[in-house]
Length: 163
Ligand code: RB5
Image 1 (spheres, rainbow, N blue to C red):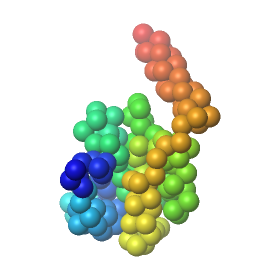
Image 2 (image 1 turned 120 degrees about the horizontal axis):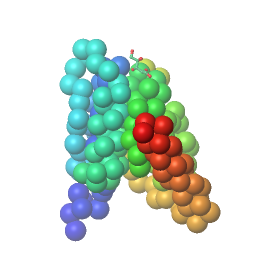
Image 3 (image 1 turned 180 degrees about the vertical axis):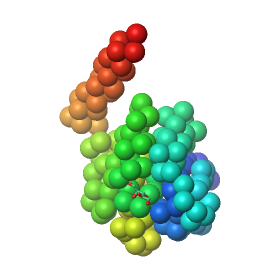
């Protein structure tokens, strides 16, 4: 079986503040055999992080990728945006332990990173752990089911408020 068949398909996106770390991550993943879809941005010219958080999230929930990586200056804005996409569980991590637990406990499907906060080397370590750690299931599933239920109830409430 070829390497790319055993590795998750990755989608990556950033705003201008996350651009340089996003590029470091993308090059590392491509050089280690991952299939990477890069949704931009493509320079340090100012853009808006919600556009990229949404795009990464939609790419994951539509199953065009298995896992996503989203980078802005702090990782905060882009994680908030990605988490507005139903089905996204975006986790902001600043260390390897959080990146690991995001997969094991939360089945996070998007890793958010702060390009102005972490070094490229630290980002690569977190991404490596995130992409190779399995969800543990078990007791954690009940909690993820509750998150999905919140999403469902809130969608219904929003529809009722709008009508
Ligand atoms: C852009 O200046 C910055 O606000 C953005 O990258 C991010 O840190 C927001 O959360």
